[in-house]
Image 1 (cartoon, helix red, strand yellow):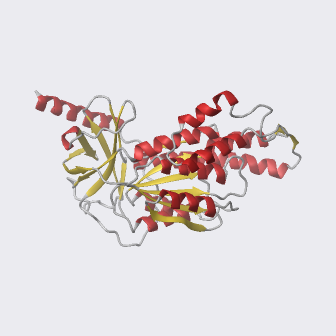
Image 2: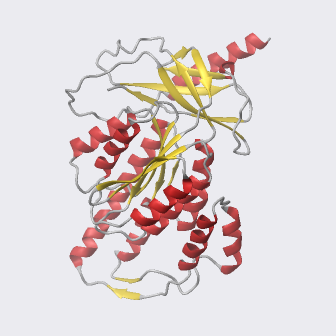
Amino acid sequence: MHFFKKWLFTSALIGLFSMIGFTQEPTPTPPDESVKIITEEVKLNVMARNRSGKFVPTLTPDDLLIVEEGTPQTITSMRRVPANVLFLLDTGGDLTFAKSVALTRLTSKIVIDNLSAEDMIAAIQYSDKIEVVSDWSADRVSVFESLDKRLFPGKRSRLSDGLNAVVELFNSRALENRHLVLISDGLESVADEAARLTALQNILAANITIHVISYTQLEQQRGRESSKRINLGKGDTKPRVPEYIFEDLLRSVPTKSPYVRVDMRRFIKSMNESQRIVILTLDNQRLKYIRGKILSWGNSETTLQTLAEDTGGLFHAPEEPATMLTFALEIAGAIDSQYVVTYSPTNPMADLDGTQSRKVRVGTHCDGIEIRSRQKLVFR
């Protein structure tokens, strides 16, 4: 009976994947003359959580099914290892309405503060230049101090260069359980389209699970207000975080470090200090530029969301700044709810027939368990 149940689940899941049809199109890839290294072993980060969002530590290989291009795969190992978590922080941009170094810093700290003590942390910022803010370390206080001292705003957005720097910094870490936390609006002001596509392809091929906290919704909302002839500037006559929920918000984001709690209190209070300002805009060129940026933020949101989904990560584009803080907790929980699952593809990777990617799905027959993993394997 157990065998029949598992056979029935396997057949149904393969059929479901076939019906879905894997509608996502692979990212276009520019010509690349680099030497491709083919490995015959695939390692997947697989998140497993119950309905309460808690990690499920009791799964075995028999509880999972991996389907690559419609073909079931045999799991050769499944284990837990500490995570390597790199933060890529967007601190640049020639025109922003919501993105701030203070909010990016605090959101990063909350993620870090709620990760397992065994996880290794690093951080990179990108704006006018690419800078390693903190090299790999398990010392949380040291990373917090680096974020306090070394994050600065700039005028340009070098997202592609930042992604390339991520791949390079990960070269010193094990291939297993790699995670990138990207806090950004997704815009690019330096690289051309070919360089951007190459950077995206490289990050997809690096076996990194990418979690994104996007400023795109916040930027678009405030951009629309600023694109009006007459608008109300930053802030409101009422507090943006009402006093009666102020303490509840602080309690809802658990913090281990007293420094992070102080930062949270300072930031949330600063959100209540805005005043309503009436602004009359007569600069037609500026209004046109803002409207163009709104369209760009919409396009970049699609790119960021696809990047997270393809790699098995989480994506969030909050409509309120405070929501970023609570979503930081979800990212930390997801990172520490991972198995590293290994299999050798039934169809050897050497038989790519000119293709550079394969579609993969991971499922389970266990009730009440959420499984998340990357949906695309990219080979370089």
